[in-house]
Amino acid sequence: MKLLLAVCIGLLSITSNATFAAEYMDKTPFQLSRAFSPGVITQGGKTVWVAGQTATKDFDGKDIANNFEAQVKQVFGQIDQVLKDAGGSLDNVVQMTVFIKESRYGDRFVEMRKDFFKNGNYPGSALITVTNFARPGIEIEIQAVGVIGDNCSQEKRCSVRK
Image 1 (spheres, rainbow, N blue to C red):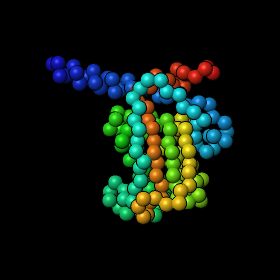
Image 2: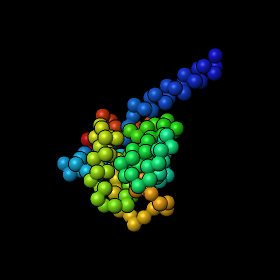
Image 3: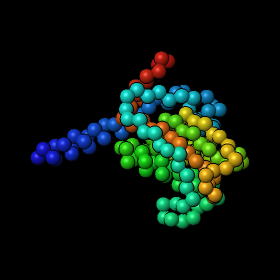
């Protein structure tokens, strides 16, 4: 009985944390077009620092070396998995640093990112072009920070401008 009660309390805690999100600050039309927020406010919650994610194989083991779009999908999937293991999801990403090998992929990345953050709560972000990566075939690397169970949201703003 005590075990069942502990499991129920744990599930309730995870469920209640999922209802809270960070406060994504108001975006200009340019920021919306580029799928990023000028700032994200958090207060409380569990911070997850996601290491830089790269991929040359997808979850099924298929070779995706030198395939930008497949790598973007895979890398976002890996970030989502790390955050799910911590009790969250991509919806909890508040900041990301994106490194791409070729600047010609910048606009395509922005369009793809919009598909992963459909609610318009885009993370604060930097998009940086690099000369190369540590392994051949890598086209993109993304570092992310997620905050799970935060006290701030669009409904419960923590910013000074309320």
